[in-house]
Length: 400
Ligand SMILES: Cc1cc2nc3c(=O)[nH]c(=O)nc-3n(C[C@H](O)[C@H](O)[C@H](O)COP(=O)(O)OP(=O)(O)OC[C@H]3O[C@@H](n4cnc5c(N)ncnc54)[C@H](O)[C@@H]3O)c2cc1C
Image (cartoon, rainbow, N blue to C red):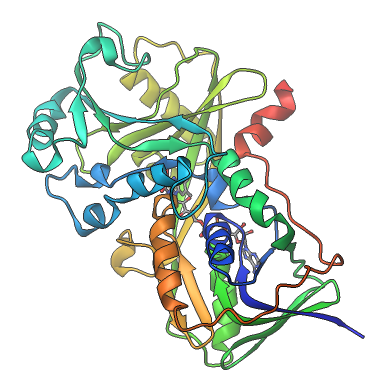
């Protein structure tokens, strides 16, 4: 006879969204199980830059947009979690930087200065004297201003480890070749994994880009057929160097988007990787890896002429950001969570917005009683591991 287990909530996808929700809902008394096809965090979450930001970088045009306002509370929500006083206990998570810097290069300096001096932003940003510049910018050749933002940067591998630990037994490896999800018009009736039948009350889709295929299956049963997703492609560069500069900063260029966003990550051999996002990663989408490497070297030379990157090893990685469909591929303002019958569809749209996602999903489930018995998770269900960071995968083989 097939072994069967009931669960209040079945979460599909084990990136930041699924893991955050599994921790939150389990702590609120719901029995949860999570299905993951790969390793935890192995898609967008471990490829993110880990910046927990309050939206100021989007306000560079001069006014705070909706996005900026909605997101402004997030760094404080994360800090509470990191201190053990928030919705989720993140005390095991390493903070790479407690601040984020912003620098303006050359001709845009005056526009940026006027903007940051505005009343609205006082307290969230401060202009730094030369001696407090991050080391990569502290050079007499540097022309421009450096600001400190009240944002932070978290180490995503330790974030994933911290989120996995309390619910490790509930994180189930799903093999699409042999396992199955059965749908009907109300939602998922059952998921069968390694011969175990899981019967959920509500199912939460938190599969990032994978939501697209799951929604297609739901749509065949006339469920959530109106919900559409979009992908925004990026081509990121990773720069391994031995200069020791740890930089967590946005460079402001002529447009209202960061010209370059730099975060720094450690390799096992003690060298550092600068992970580069911003406009370079958007322009990089139309380039092959060699072209992006050349464009990266050119950009580093233009922005840091006093640093010698000639010995740096540069690799690139393509990744799509997966989000709900928006007009003209604009960035969504908030986390997205919508319920249709017994199905909840989510995209955090940013790592930063995980607390906002948690609030929204809890609201959507407010009428759901926690009814499943607290029973042991069957041993026959295979459990998941956290994925290895991409920079370790890319540079680790040659330098381990
Ligand atoms: C290059 C880059 C940089 C970023 N930088 C930042 C940043 O600095 N700050 C910020 O706030 N945000 C950032 N983001 C956005 C952020 O990373 C994402 O919004 C967030 O990680 C999405 O999390 P997720 O859990 O929805 O998706 P994912 O992390 O992609 O997780 C989805 C999971 O679902 C699994 N899955 C897929 N299909 C199925 C299925 N059928 N069954 C079971 N499991 C399935 C996948 O294997 C995956 O593990 C960045 C994104 C990118 C791409």
